[in-house]
Amino acid sequence: MKITDFKYFYPERPRLIHISQVGRYDRPGFVAEPKYNGTRLELHHLDGAWQFWGRHGDKLVYSPAPEVAAELENLSRLISGYWVFDGELRHNKAVGVKHKIIIYDVFIACNELLTAQTFNGRRGILESIIPVDGDPVGLIRQYPPGAGIFPPQGPRSFEKLFKELTQADEIEGLVIKAQAGTLNLGRSRGIDSAWMVKVRKPSGRYHF
Image 1 (cartoon, rainbow, N blue to C red):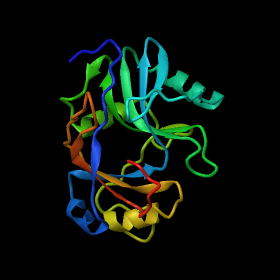
Image 2: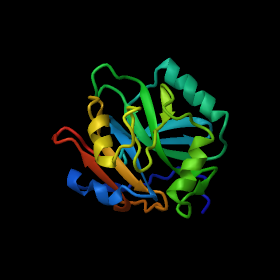
Image 3: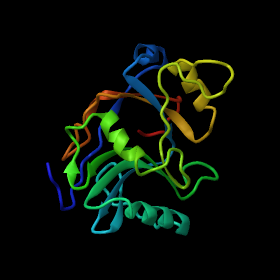
């Protein structure tokens, strides 16, 4: 489906699970991603300009720092047409963290609504244009089943990975995604996802 004019799509809401349920997803076909403490960002690129939107269909009042503007300008040179990225604005939510953007997914690429693409296919599009863990604009790092972040201690289950990643103050949880998942975007509200789940630190401050 081709889209050339501005459209807002409400992002799906990952279903909340308990840490004791994480093991059922720790198998091939799923990947885990850290969830940053920030403002959910729907990043639109239309007619050569960037627009910053929130998860409730609200346009964000945000002026990017020069280093963010420069990275977005570099990205503009790699893309054409209408694009909509799903991510997080890491700005003033965690102590010492300002003017950073992390990208989780892409909804529209080159005017094409990607509802027919699997999450793995959409990830391939992102990897071709955005560096993983790039700073100040980067693509979220993924962890396959059994992955670890502190070698040489060996493989990690998703449960252990959650405990390791959330030691960082800015990481509020883990989102586990089916690589075959397809988008189910809302036009009037966010829809509970059938292919994403989340587990988070026990705190009332975090919002997914």
